[in-house]
Length: 166
Ligand code: SF4
Image 1 (cartoon, rainbow, N blue to C red):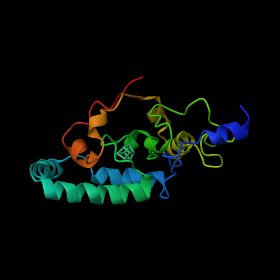
Image 2: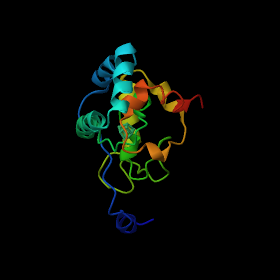
Image 3: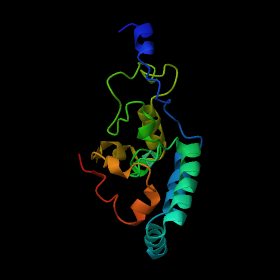
């Protein structure tokens, strides 16, 4: 398909893929702090019983994660299995690897000149010795979770089935 035709297909509502500004190893280290434990589970239960603090917490999460990962607040976070490159920043929201349109130089079909988020995921996993993560099969997300706190969902054990063996 000619490049000019492809560029006209760019949807108005989509934003470009996001390559996190912080290294993968740092994000894996930070993730260890967020692993479910009794304190986080207790906080999650309390937040879900109190609407206003839950909203404030979710807004804070959105601010942090959107600046670091371009988070779209899908509520069911894939980051630990994608080298902390958010697949929801793919304009097609591909959660199981790149589409067939990724360009030969590794850039996005929809946003020319911007690295495909799945190429970024591969590079980040490779640097962290976690390429095997990219073999995992991500299950369809529950769209009703959009806008929810993915941290609360994670601590409540709702992410346990987000991905599995291929
Ligand atoms: S919660 Fe969803 S949209 Fe946000 S970083 Fe995780 S996968 Fe991406």
